Image (cartoon, rainbow, N blue to C red; front, side):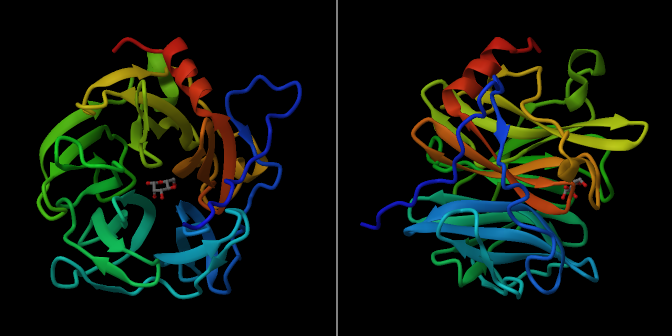
Length: 324
Ligand code: BMA
């Protein structure tokens, strides 16, 4: 057995009562971290061997969107491959892919599954598996275009793989609710169910335009903890914040609790200024007992982290629960 590395962690600052607090090292990955990059953000991190592995969204200086693999001993300092992942064929012929962005990584059994927004004549959900973060095998897309924010649950539920996703359009999508779909084999997806809709502006405006799942759902005694992004349309464009909900363990299409308050909204300079200002876009988390470290893209430019306690996040969701 490999000894597990500790997850990145900083204690809550003295005098703070916040449920979520940011790292004092933010951004932990800058926009020019590899020679070709214009920006690195919205990336997925997971425990791997005695450290961590990641799949990173790197936009190059043509602003071509692609995903790159990387490794780290401590979850903060990353060696990211300068070249994008070259997919091999998985459970089908190698599929056309115009672009790849916003990856998530889920471990199911012994295998790591990557989902991302895949350009297949329009954005949809790409799927690949890897055992070592060197070789990746691309499988069938989960859905027809247009779809984004495909996030797999970390185990089968009722003997099926389960994926959250957000049906969308070919542009910047001024709408969007979270659905889930089941698959017996990572090839065919069906039994699509609505999970959560946006909320009325008067009730919870930060999540009134669109919502999309973020990190891999976390199994807790109280339900699946789902951290997601919510978007409001302002006179200056979209603003992305982070919120959370609890889903039923055996029927994850059922929302048990959902916070009307956001957990984290853009306030730091690196979240307010960048290629797309006012964006907090969570894509991954690491857990160690009650501690959670959440990785998020800041302003479509850099990778940042923030911290919290799972029990406090759950208490927050229950306290500020909205009745739908
Ligand atoms: C979404 C995606 C994300 C991005 C966000 C804010 O539609 O493109 O990658 O972070 O917009 O620009």
